[in-house]
Image (cartoon, rainbow, N blue to C red; front, side, top):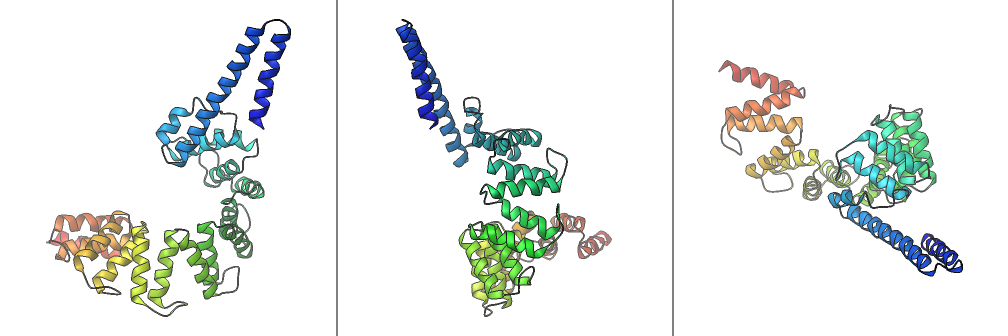
Length: 335
């Protein structure tokens, strides 16, 4: 429609000059405007392609050439500033671009601006305004907004806490295929919050979320097999799911996988492999794993004895509140 309108407008301009006797001028002006439009459209298409493919430095270079009046472009630029993709992270600038897009009803910008108000990034924190924006985004079909509304009701942020309402909104997003909402709805069924407790239903939603690639859901299925919750206890199946979650970067799963290798649960006992996974979890901030790495360095389990490294990891765990790590540090100091 926009292409047709621009071409008709250009032809009208050309025709005006033609009937006034300025044929050459009319043709030149028409071509100039069509060419300018074409260049902008080309740059805008390349911009969106770069964003989709994660080539944000390329996208940033194209920002000066795109159609910045288009709300979808404004929302995309806002996201780049929010995440620091291809540009310096700037929450205030992200808010500015999101506002421009929300004035034109862009659903993505409404949701993203809502998250800025929810967290107080680039704007004064106002959860009530955030929920209003999420509602408007949901009405316009944004798939993430219902989950954000569900979170608001679950935690009582911006609205009064209501687990029934939370479950309703999680379901709305889950049925649209939003993987985190599918996992959240599964948790509601697992614990009987806002819905009647139903472990089979919980497992179904966890599997849907896992099929969509959500690491926490993958790990949760492993946890259920490990503990025999809603399924027959199966350590080998638990190992398979927990390893898959660990490989996706789920920190608690990395720590649990290390424990499984250490104890030989669902797999062959392997102290070296246990050390590698526990260390990875420790590097990612898991307190138990940091304590374990300190202990393993202290006593040479799965690695060489190294008291310097032991102290380093005990200190990290102690900073996160581990009393055992604090005691271990005092013992090492007495030597």
